[in-house]
Length: 362
Image 1 (tube, one colour):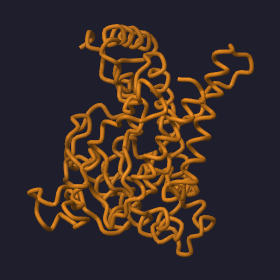
Image 2 (cartoon, rainbow, N blue to C red):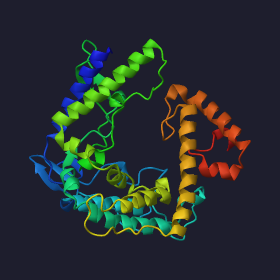
Image 3 (cartoon, one colour):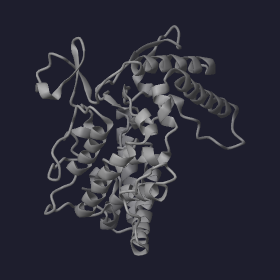
Image 4 (spheres, rainbow, N blue to C red):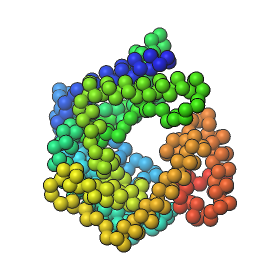
Protein backbone atom coordinates (compact mmCIF):
# COMPACT_ATOMS: atom_id res chain seq x y z
CA UNK A 1 0.00 0.00 0.00
CA UNK A 2 1.08 3.55 -0.64
CA UNK A 3 1.12 6.02 2.23
CA UNK A 4 -2.09 7.66 1.01
CA UNK A 5 -3.82 4.30 0.73
CA UNK A 6 -2.79 3.34 4.27
CA UNK A 7 -4.20 6.58 5.65
CA UNK A 8 -7.46 6.12 3.70
CA UNK A 9 -7.70 2.52 4.93
CA UNK A 10 -7.15 3.72 8.50
CA UNK A 11 -10.05 6.11 8.03
CA UNK A 12 -12.26 3.27 6.79
CA UNK A 13 -11.40 1.20 9.87
CA UNK A 14 -12.29 4.12 12.15
CA UNK A 15 -15.66 4.30 10.38
CA UNK A 16 -16.21 0.64 11.31
CA UNK A 17 -15.29 1.37 14.93
CA UNK A 18 -17.71 4.31 14.89
CA UNK A 19 -20.57 2.03 13.84
CA UNK A 20 -19.84 -0.45 16.65
CA UNK A 21 -19.41 2.25 19.29
CA UNK A 22 -22.69 3.89 18.29
CA UNK A 23 -24.70 0.94 19.64
CA UNK A 24 -26.09 1.69 23.09
CA UNK A 25 -25.96 -1.19 25.56
CA UNK A 26 -27.43 -1.26 29.07
CA UNK A 27 -25.18 -3.97 30.50
CA UNK A 28 -21.69 -5.46 30.26
CA UNK A 29 -21.14 -8.99 28.99
CA UNK A 30 -21.40 -10.71 25.62
CA UNK A 31 -24.00 -10.56 22.88
CA UNK A 32 -26.24 -13.64 22.52
CA UNK A 33 -29.28 -14.64 20.52
CA UNK A 34 -32.22 -14.18 22.84
CA UNK A 35 -33.26 -17.79 22.19
CA UNK A 36 -29.96 -19.26 23.46
CA UNK A 37 -30.45 -21.96 26.10
CA UNK A 38 -28.90 -20.33 29.15
CA UNK A 39 -30.43 -19.50 32.52
CA UNK A 40 -32.84 -16.60 32.09
CA UNK A 41 -31.29 -14.90 35.14
CA UNK A 42 -28.05 -14.67 33.14
CA UNK A 43 -29.63 -12.72 30.28
CA UNK A 44 -30.40 -9.03 29.99
CA UNK A 45 -32.74 -8.13 27.16
CA UNK A 46 -31.09 -5.92 24.58
CA UNK A 47 -33.11 -5.63 21.40
CA UNK A 48 -35.42 -7.87 19.42
CA UNK A 49 -33.79 -11.28 19.07
CA UNK A 50 -30.69 -10.46 21.15
CA UNK A 51 -29.60 -10.35 24.78
CA UNK A 52 -26.54 -9.60 26.88
CA UNK A 53 -25.32 -12.68 28.73
CA UNK A 54 -22.15 -13.95 30.47
CA UNK A 55 -18.87 -12.54 29.20
CA UNK A 56 -17.27 -14.90 26.69
CA UNK A 57 -13.74 -13.49 26.98
CA UNK A 58 -11.06 -15.96 28.04
CA UNK A 59 -10.32 -13.75 31.06
CA UNK A 60 -13.42 -15.18 32.75
CA UNK A 61 -13.13 -18.89 31.90
CA UNK A 62 -10.91 -21.82 32.83
CA UNK A 63 -9.82 -22.46 29.24
CA UNK A 64 -6.06 -21.86 29.25
CA UNK A 65 -3.72 -24.61 30.44
CA UNK A 66 -1.12 -21.95 31.23
CA UNK A 67 -3.46 -20.18 33.65
CA UNK A 68 -5.73 -22.65 35.46
CA UNK A 69 -8.61 -21.39 37.57
CA UNK A 70 -9.00 -22.80 41.03
CA UNK A 71 -12.01 -20.87 42.38
CA UNK A 72 -10.78 -21.57 45.90
CA UNK A 73 -10.95 -17.88 46.86
CA UNK A 74 -13.94 -16.80 44.75
CA UNK A 75 -16.76 -18.21 42.68
CA UNK A 76 -17.00 -17.68 38.90
CA UNK A 77 -18.30 -14.18 38.14
CA UNK A 78 -18.91 -13.85 34.40
CA UNK A 79 -21.78 -11.42 34.29
CA UNK A 80 -23.73 -9.89 32.85
CA UNK A 81 -23.20 -6.79 35.00
CA UNK A 82 -25.51 -3.80 35.13
CA UNK A 83 -23.09 -1.17 36.44
CA UNK A 84 -19.36 -0.38 36.38
CA UNK A 85 -18.84 -1.22 40.06
CA UNK A 86 -20.18 -4.75 39.56
CA UNK A 87 -17.95 -5.13 36.48
CA UNK A 88 -14.86 -4.01 38.41
CA UNK A 89 -15.68 -6.28 41.34
CA UNK A 90 -15.79 -9.16 38.84
CA UNK A 91 -12.28 -8.27 37.67
CA UNK A 92 -11.06 -8.73 41.24
CA UNK A 93 -12.93 -12.03 41.41
CA UNK A 94 -11.05 -13.10 38.27
CA UNK A 95 -7.79 -12.31 40.04
CA UNK A 96 -8.86 -14.39 43.03
CA UNK A 97 -9.96 -17.27 40.79
CA UNK A 98 -6.39 -17.62 39.53
CA UNK A 99 -5.00 -18.25 43.02
CA UNK A 100 -4.33 -21.86 44.02
CA UNK A 101 -5.51 -23.14 47.40
CA UNK A 102 -3.39 -22.14 50.38
CA UNK A 103 -2.08 -25.68 50.86
CA UNK A 104 -1.26 -26.28 47.18
CA UNK A 105 2.33 -26.85 46.07
CA UNK A 106 3.07 -24.71 43.00
CA UNK A 107 6.51 -25.07 41.43
CA UNK A 108 8.27 -22.87 38.92
CA UNK A 109 7.32 -19.50 40.44
CA UNK A 110 10.19 -17.08 41.16
CA UNK A 111 10.66 -15.72 44.70
CA UNK A 112 9.34 -12.30 43.71
CA UNK A 113 6.03 -13.75 42.55
CA UNK A 114 4.48 -13.46 46.00
CA UNK A 115 2.56 -15.81 48.27
CA UNK A 116 -1.12 -16.63 47.85
CA UNK A 117 -1.78 -14.74 51.08
CA UNK A 118 -0.12 -11.62 49.68
CA UNK A 119 -2.11 -11.86 46.44
CA UNK A 120 -5.36 -12.13 48.41
CA UNK A 121 -4.39 -9.14 50.53
CA UNK A 122 -3.62 -6.98 47.48
CA UNK A 123 -6.76 -8.03 45.62
CA UNK A 124 -8.96 -7.22 48.62
CA UNK A 125 -7.41 -3.76 48.69
CA UNK A 126 -7.97 -3.63 44.95
CA UNK A 127 -11.70 -4.23 45.36
CA UNK A 128 -11.94 -1.33 47.82
CA UNK A 129 -9.88 0.95 45.57
CA UNK A 130 -12.03 0.10 42.55
CA UNK A 131 -15.17 0.90 44.54
CA UNK A 132 -13.83 4.40 45.21
CA UNK A 133 -12.35 5.06 41.77
CA UNK A 134 -15.53 4.16 39.93
CA UNK A 135 -17.35 7.02 41.68
CA UNK A 136 -15.16 9.56 39.88
CA UNK A 137 -17.20 11.49 37.26
CA UNK A 138 -14.45 11.17 34.64
CA UNK A 139 -14.36 7.39 35.08
CA UNK A 140 -18.15 7.23 35.03
CA UNK A 141 -18.09 9.11 31.71
CA UNK A 142 -15.54 6.64 30.36
CA UNK A 143 -17.48 3.59 31.58
CA UNK A 144 -20.09 3.51 28.81
CA UNK A 145 -20.74 -0.09 27.64
CA UNK A 146 -19.07 -0.46 24.26
CA UNK A 147 -18.71 -3.32 21.80
CA UNK A 148 -15.30 -3.37 20.12
CA UNK A 149 -13.16 -5.90 18.30
CA UNK A 150 -10.65 -7.32 20.80
CA UNK A 151 -7.87 -7.93 18.26
CA UNK A 152 -8.21 -5.30 15.54
CA UNK A 153 -4.80 -5.80 13.97
CA UNK A 154 -3.65 -5.99 10.38
CA UNK A 155 -3.76 -9.77 10.18
CA UNK A 156 -7.52 -9.70 10.88
CA UNK A 157 -8.47 -7.01 8.36
CA UNK A 158 -9.11 -7.73 4.67
CA UNK A 159 -9.19 -5.12 1.93
CA UNK A 160 -10.31 -5.15 -1.70
CA UNK A 161 -7.71 -6.31 -4.22
CA UNK A 162 -8.84 -3.59 -6.59
CA UNK A 163 -9.04 -0.77 -4.05
CA UNK A 164 -6.94 -1.19 -0.91
CA UNK A 165 -8.87 1.55 0.87
CA UNK A 166 -12.05 -0.55 0.95
CA UNK A 167 -12.50 -2.90 3.93
CA UNK A 168 -14.04 -6.16 2.72
CA UNK A 169 -13.95 -8.14 5.95
CA UNK A 170 -12.80 -8.30 9.57
CA UNK A 171 -12.27 -11.70 11.21
CA UNK A 172 -11.56 -13.11 14.69
CA UNK A 173 -14.60 -11.79 16.55
CA UNK A 174 -14.93 -14.62 19.05
CA UNK A 175 -13.77 -12.63 22.08
CA UNK A 176 -15.61 -9.41 21.24
CA UNK A 177 -17.79 -8.39 24.17
CA UNK A 178 -19.40 -5.37 25.76
CA UNK A 179 -16.98 -3.77 28.24
CA UNK A 180 -16.63 -0.37 29.89
CA UNK A 181 -14.92 1.89 27.39
CA UNK A 182 -12.05 2.50 29.84
CA UNK A 183 -10.96 -1.13 29.43
CA UNK A 184 -9.80 -0.15 25.91
CA UNK A 185 -7.93 2.98 27.02
CA UNK A 186 -4.44 1.68 26.27
CA UNK A 187 -5.22 -0.34 23.15
CA UNK A 188 -3.58 0.81 19.91
CA UNK A 189 -3.97 -1.44 16.84
CA UNK A 190 -0.69 -2.29 15.12
CA UNK A 191 -1.68 -0.38 11.96
CA UNK A 192 -1.97 2.78 14.11
CA UNK A 193 1.20 2.36 16.16
CA UNK A 194 3.84 5.04 15.81
CA UNK A 195 7.15 3.96 14.34
CA UNK A 196 9.77 2.88 16.85
CA UNK A 197 12.56 4.03 14.51
CA UNK A 198 14.18 7.16 15.93
CA UNK A 199 17.62 7.23 14.31
CA UNK A 200 18.42 10.37 12.28
CA UNK A 201 20.45 8.58 9.63
CA UNK A 202 18.25 5.94 8.02
CA UNK A 203 17.63 4.75 4.49
CA UNK A 204 15.04 6.45 2.28
CA UNK A 205 12.84 3.35 2.48
CA UNK A 206 12.96 3.32 6.29
CA UNK A 207 12.29 7.04 6.38
CA UNK A 208 9.19 6.62 4.21
CA UNK A 209 8.00 3.67 6.32
CA UNK A 210 8.44 5.72 9.51
CA UNK A 211 6.61 8.69 8.00
CA UNK A 212 3.72 6.52 6.80
CA UNK A 213 3.40 4.78 10.17
CA UNK A 214 3.32 8.07 12.04
CA UNK A 215 0.79 9.58 9.63
CA UNK A 216 -1.47 6.53 10.10
CA UNK A 217 -1.14 6.91 13.86
CA UNK A 218 -2.15 10.57 13.66
CA UNK A 219 -5.04 9.78 11.31
CA UNK A 220 -6.31 7.09 13.69
CA UNK A 221 -6.10 9.42 16.71
CA UNK A 222 -7.86 12.25 14.88
CA UNK A 223 -10.58 9.91 13.63
CA UNK A 224 -11.29 8.49 17.10
CA UNK A 225 -11.35 11.98 18.61
CA UNK A 226 -13.91 13.23 16.09
CA UNK A 227 -15.99 10.13 15.35
CA UNK A 228 -15.83 7.97 18.49
CA UNK A 229 -16.07 10.27 21.53
CA UNK A 230 -17.14 7.30 23.68
CA UNK A 231 -13.68 5.82 23.16
CA UNK A 232 -11.75 9.09 23.00
CA UNK A 233 -12.94 9.97 26.52
CA UNK A 234 -10.85 7.07 27.85
CA UNK A 235 -7.65 8.49 26.37
CA UNK A 236 -7.87 11.43 28.73
CA UNK A 237 -7.93 9.27 31.85
CA UNK A 238 -4.82 9.29 34.01
CA UNK A 239 -2.40 6.46 33.19
CA UNK A 240 -2.23 5.38 36.84
CA UNK A 241 -6.01 4.88 36.80
CA UNK A 242 -6.13 2.90 33.56
CA UNK A 243 -3.21 0.74 34.72
CA UNK A 244 -5.22 -0.20 37.80
CA UNK A 245 -8.05 -1.65 35.70
CA UNK A 246 -5.56 -3.33 33.39
CA UNK A 247 -3.68 -5.15 36.16
CA UNK A 248 -6.21 -5.71 38.96
CA UNK A 249 -7.23 -9.14 37.64
CA UNK A 250 -3.84 -10.57 36.71
CA UNK A 251 -1.69 -10.45 39.84
CA UNK A 252 -0.94 -14.18 39.72
CA UNK A 253 0.15 -13.90 36.11
CA UNK A 254 2.42 -10.89 36.59
CA UNK A 255 3.58 -11.28 40.17
CA UNK A 256 2.33 -9.49 43.26
CA UNK A 257 4.89 -6.70 42.89
CA UNK A 258 3.30 -5.36 39.72
CA UNK A 259 -0.12 -4.74 41.22
CA UNK A 260 1.43 -3.57 44.50
CA UNK A 261 3.31 -0.90 42.53
CA UNK A 262 0.07 0.09 40.77
CA UNK A 263 -1.62 0.53 44.16
CA UNK A 264 1.33 2.50 45.54
CA UNK A 265 1.32 4.83 42.52
CA UNK A 266 -2.39 5.47 43.02
CA UNK A 267 -2.08 5.99 46.78
CA UNK A 268 0.70 8.56 46.31
CA UNK A 269 -1.44 10.63 43.95
CA UNK A 270 -4.86 9.90 45.45
CA UNK A 271 -5.78 13.50 46.29
CA UNK A 272 -4.17 14.79 43.11
CA UNK A 273 -6.47 12.45 41.18
CA UNK A 274 -9.47 14.23 42.74
CA UNK A 275 -10.41 11.60 45.31
CA UNK A 276 -12.04 13.17 48.37
CA UNK A 277 -12.17 10.10 50.61
CA UNK A 278 -8.97 8.50 51.99
CA UNK A 279 -7.28 5.93 49.78
CA UNK A 280 -8.23 2.40 50.91
CA UNK A 281 -4.67 1.21 50.25
CA UNK A 282 -2.14 2.38 52.88
CA UNK A 283 1.31 3.41 51.68
CA UNK A 284 4.03 0.94 52.77
CA UNK A 285 6.30 1.57 55.73
CA UNK A 286 9.98 2.33 54.96
CA UNK A 287 10.88 -1.32 55.61
CA UNK A 288 8.04 -2.57 53.43
CA UNK A 289 9.07 -0.13 50.71
CA UNK A 290 12.65 -1.46 50.67
CA UNK A 291 11.40 -5.05 50.43
CA UNK A 292 9.02 -4.07 47.64
CA UNK A 293 11.72 -2.25 45.65
CA UNK A 294 14.01 -5.26 45.84
CA UNK A 295 11.22 -7.56 44.67
CA UNK A 296 10.09 -5.15 41.97
CA UNK A 297 13.63 -4.76 40.63
CA UNK A 298 13.90 -8.55 40.22
CA UNK A 299 10.56 -8.52 38.44
CA UNK A 300 11.67 -5.70 36.10
CA UNK A 301 14.86 -7.62 35.29
CA UNK A 302 12.75 -10.66 34.37
CA UNK A 303 10.57 -8.51 32.11
CA UNK A 304 13.63 -7.08 30.37
CA UNK A 305 14.89 -10.61 29.85
CA UNK A 306 11.59 -11.55 28.26
CA UNK A 307 11.73 -8.57 25.90
CA UNK A 308 15.28 -9.55 24.91
CA UNK A 309 14.29 -13.16 24.25
CA UNK A 310 11.22 -12.13 22.26
CA UNK A 311 13.40 -9.86 20.14
CA UNK A 312 16.06 -12.53 19.55
CA UNK A 313 13.48 -15.18 18.65
CA UNK A 314 11.04 -12.82 16.92
CA UNK A 315 8.08 -14.19 18.88
CA UNK A 316 4.89 -12.79 20.33
CA UNK A 317 4.59 -12.30 24.11
CA UNK A 318 3.02 -15.75 24.48
CA UNK A 319 5.72 -17.41 22.36
CA UNK A 320 3.65 -17.65 19.18
CA UNK A 321 5.56 -17.93 15.89
CA UNK A 322 4.31 -18.67 12.35
CA UNK A 323 4.18 -22.36 11.48
CA UNK A 324 6.80 -21.96 8.78
CA UNK A 325 9.25 -20.47 11.30
CA UNK A 326 8.67 -23.05 14.05
CA UNK A 327 11.65 -25.34 13.36
CA UNK A 328 14.19 -22.54 13.03
CA UNK A 329 12.81 -20.68 16.06
CA UNK A 330 12.87 -23.86 18.17
CA UNK A 331 16.54 -24.37 17.31
CA UNK A 332 17.34 -20.74 18.12
CA UNK A 333 15.40 -21.09 21.37
CA UNK A 334 17.55 -24.05 22.37
CA UNK A 335 20.79 -22.22 21.52
CA UNK A 336 19.74 -19.15 23.47
CA UNK A 337 18.70 -21.22 26.48
CA UNK A 338 22.04 -23.03 26.43
CA UNK A 339 23.88 -19.69 26.30
CA UNK A 340 22.15 -18.57 29.48
CA UNK A 341 22.91 -21.92 31.14
CA UNK A 342 26.58 -21.00 30.89
CA UNK A 343 26.08 -18.07 33.26
CA UNK A 344 23.10 -19.18 35.38
CA UNK A 345 22.08 -22.28 37.27
CA UNK A 346 19.30 -24.45 35.85
CA UNK A 347 16.85 -23.72 38.67
CA UNK A 348 17.58 -19.99 38.63
CA UNK A 349 17.13 -19.87 34.86
CA UNK A 350 13.87 -21.80 34.93
CA UNK A 351 12.44 -19.30 37.42
CA UNK A 352 12.93 -16.34 35.07
CA UNK A 353 12.72 -17.97 31.62
CA UNK A 354 9.45 -16.71 30.08
CA UNK A 355 8.73 -19.69 27.83
CA UNK A 356 8.61 -23.45 28.19
CA UNK A 357 11.90 -25.26 28.51
CA UNK A 358 13.28 -26.08 25.04
CA UNK A 359 12.08 -29.50 23.96
CA UNK A 360 15.46 -31.15 23.40
CA UNK A 361 16.51 -30.43 26.99
CA UNK A 362 13.48 -32.15 28.53
